[in-house]
Every structure is written in C-alpha cells, then in structure tokens.
Image (tube, rainbow, N blue to C red):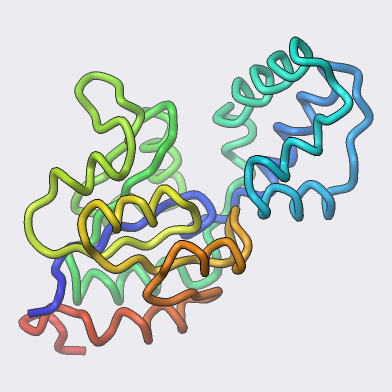
Length: 219
C-alpha cells in the first residue's frame, strides 16, 4: 500500500519567502550601519548553506555578528515581513490534488505558532491540512521535524527545501522529496539522498503519484 501521510514544509516549499528574508537582512544591516550586498549575492550564499551565508557578515566581529543575528531573528517573523510572502503559483491546485490522494499535513519550524496559523489563514491555505505542527519545542511540541517524524505511525512522505525535511525522512525511514526553488540549491539537496528533486508542482505530482494511497487515488 502507498504512503498515506504527506508531510509538507511551508517556507520555500509552498510559499516564496525570499522577500521576507531579504528585508530581514536589510533591517539587520541597517541596525549595524553595515552596507548590504546585492540581492543576487545574498540569495546565492543563503542557498549554499549556513557556512557560505556567514560571508554576508564576514566583516563583523563576534559581538556584532551576534547582534546582527539577533536583529535578523527578531524581524524574520514580524507581521509586516510575513505579509510579503506569497504562495508559489499553483499551490492551491497542488494541495487540492494531494488532498485527494494523501492525508496532507504541514510541519513548519517557525518560532510563533500563532503567527504561522494566522498567515496560513490569510493565504487561504490552512484548510488543506489535517494537522499543522510547529516544531519549535515549546509547550510539549516537537523540537524539530526529525523528532516529529519518529512519533508518527504508519508510512509517511516528506517534502521540503532543507536538511530538516531530509533528516525527518531519514528518521521515519521514508522518502524525501526535495524542493530546489527554496533555501537550498540543487547540489546540496542531491547530497541529502532525495527520492526526487523538483522545481515545480508538475514535477512533484509526477514523483508522488505512484505512492498515492490506492483507496483514494481515483483521479
């Protein structure tokens, strides 16, 4: 029998968050009176991973780096920046398609559950998910997606754009489907052993279709 539970990531997988990340970076630069680089350089380095992204603040001392990261973290889930996020084209259609074939769940590593749920409501996405789990470790919640994965019963599939979803899939001994339009570049994702790498929903549907639960895969 095919897998019944499809766990989806949010940021970088279902919604485009680059404008929010860029604005948080610019605000942190302003707080430290540091000249920002170009958006193209920012995006390239972020997609290459945390070590590469450290080059963005290479000119700061340790105390300044801590201050920069603190400001950036304070802004990254600010309502004014969350309002910049947009679903990727075809997100609603994909979620409707997936809902006919899987039990669709969302796992996100946000800090604030309330803000995440509010954003899902404002984007019209929340109703597509049977469960929304914020893996922030607060109030008994899982501390990360791998912890969440180990707690699940039955077969699962994991979809996302970072190492977090790859580690969750590994913990669950489940397939990982990697999204290459998010925060990690294709070369890094390939190194995580995905079942498939996709850059659009058509490719993801093709990869998932053979794994749909037979009793619900009528169309």
